[in-house]
Length: 386
Ligand code: SF4
Image: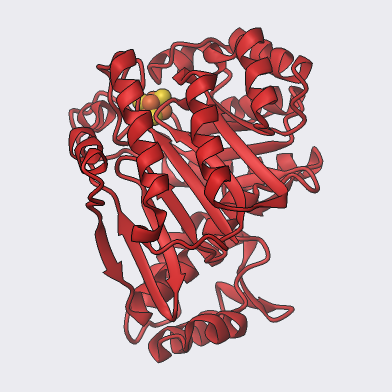
């Protein structure tokens, strides 16, 4: 079981809240060179510790803006993966796209390539908010992109939305969610806007020129939004993700359940279990260094063998985001014992914030807005339940 993430770092412009590694100055020649580097990385799979028998269960073209890449380049990458690895029967291939990049001919080409899931970077369905977020699409483009994708035959579409935006009220957020639900996507992801260091939004907040909703309003947005999704037939299977039955993201579930994944491309991360070795590695963060390392067939990644503490921090961090929670006994069999201090803190927190449900440890719904605080208590020696 292997999830493959392919990173395309190109964007027409930098959104004011984004701190991903993106390249806004590029031409076709750079895209060609970059795609060649991706092909070379796949060709060198053994140097990264991957094996021919690793069955690929999902591929995710993310970025950046992979919808800017020609179907020819996407096809080249897919074919190269298919050359070396078996694809599982229930196979998910996702492409991230901005609504304004969805055109009839492009959507039809994506479908022909075998892409069977589109993740639309909608962010908001409110033109004022879209403008503030620096997006180039308008609400009408969201509806139009959905129409084109359906006509091209896509039956699995996800929408990414952002909440806790500048001057956004609970009612504004509920209206955006209603508009998204009215488009009937199979999957909706709702992410809280976080102010990342050194972004334009960070500067605005620092200078007092941007007012974000207070914590209580944000907590209401999380909990009321969740209820709204449930009432509309979506199951919030993860804190930020809800899906109609059978449309949960295979690829993202792999991350949250501790399955191996291979991140291909500049700055991409991987997680690997190999002969008892559990490791995480990351490709160079700079496009030129990445392309050069691949041109010389010399993988240049930073590799870290995970200590039990780091591994269990990661497992709890992702597992507690899931509605089904985390099966600690199963993970102990797979990865070795959890640190005793974590288990002691979990036991204490089971009186207040956590609960054991059918062998799984889950977060109580009302504490979803304070997951980070709960995790902090688990990871801090001699935590006191409040
Ligand atoms: S389109 Fe996505 S990746 Fe590109 S700058 Fe905007 S938020 Fe970042």
